[in-house]
Length: 446
Image 1 (cartoon, rainbow, N blue to C red):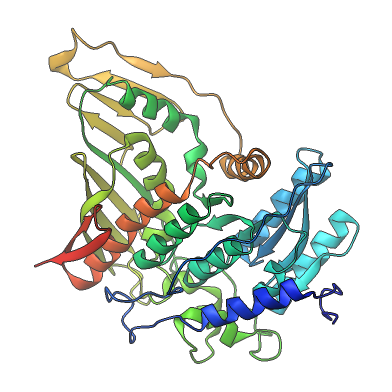
Image 2 (cartoon, rainbow, N blue to C red; image 1 turned 90 degrees about the vertical axis):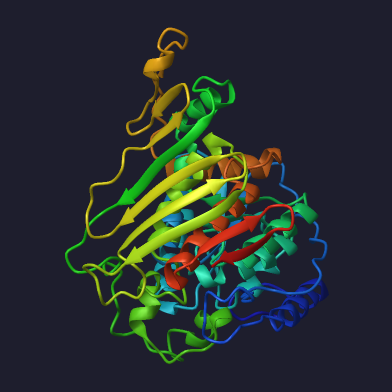
């Protein structure tokens, strides 16, 4: 049998994978229309199996990759990996792409073919891409409601995964995806939170670990920006999009359940609470992730947050958020996010004996006045790494070759989603939430 899109032969192994994945996808559970119900799963249920055997890297060392989602973020990734290859900066080749938006997919296909000099296979169904046995890694840049299922399917197909942030849309999805990775150590998952590669956070991590600031007490960070007309409206709506013609809308909706055609939702899904956590999952994760890595204070155990619609009242998600996150080792993280004012908080880690300042490109520790005679000030002048997102992409390619765990790994990603999901629930439900790391369960307070 020949697949007419890819012109690749389809063998029995591929048929078996597609059949199994389709059956598993049928087990998706949706709990009414409430995204924040504690019982909502939104990803696969049932036992976690064993991943397929990985495709070995050839003697030429070229990482052959597929990309799922070719829109804003996916398009940016395509540009970067093509640049790595054409400039001789890394051995990588994009061999397949998938997008249910055929117009976007055609733009990406033409760009890739022109840069690489041969044809890239294109798919409407990502399971067909995953069934190929010539792909080492898959980059997933789909909308958030697809992250968990696509990532699990890719891992079970024996592919290493670069998964755009946030790792998942909801906490139950993150807990399952973490278990998938733990159960299958031969495949790797990296979460696309690029600021984790900045050297200043590694320097802060070392200072905290060596006790330079004493007991870390509380820290703060933010991601704040402004817009005239509302956030994420810069994602354009193509008047030529037509469901059933050049957009597979039902497949786009996927785990969220089929909705009426909505081109604004298709282009600007970050504004809608059924499909994104908005500021929290799309922006704040870039700041929370490296700070949580540097702090190493364990799992979030209590989260309370508030959100408002102060300027952009048309957006379902909040345009101003404030989070307070407590950790199991005894630490509080304060986080602010805004799309209606660009002035944020200074990023810092406060300890009993000293304070670490991280707003610039370096890492500076200043002793507390009471400990000035006992604690020496420190400053680490950090080397520039250029584009930190490119650094994360290269980190993933390096991990595919060396099999070492990525810096932005599934364990850290899950801890971040605990904070993201419970903060989101807190904002919408008006409650504080607790997380028990021993049982991996979350409960509301009050």
